[in-house]
Image 1: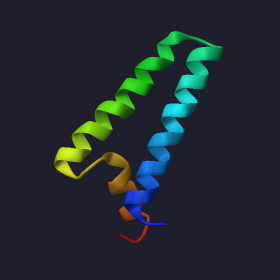
Image 2: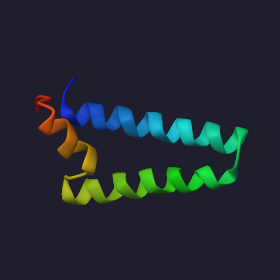
Image 3: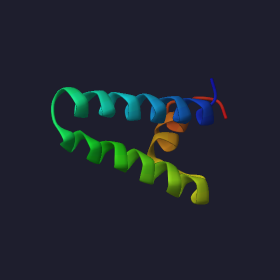
Image 4: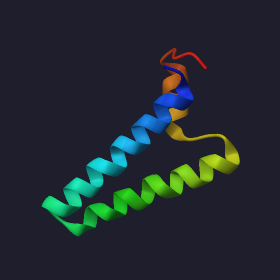
Amino acid sequence: MTVNRTVRAAAGLFILLSLLLAWLHSPYWLGFTAFVGINLLQSAFTDWCPLMTILRKAGMKE
């Protein structure tokens, strides 16, 4: 997988996981959902997110 595809997959996974945790445990987990959404929005304009940096340093291909 490439960096971009991995970032999208991780974002989807984090959103679904946080929604599940909000449903099962506490609605405060929706804050994490909002964080992921905001991060996706800013990365659309800047083409950068923290996970991209981590994956590139780990040697994942572009």
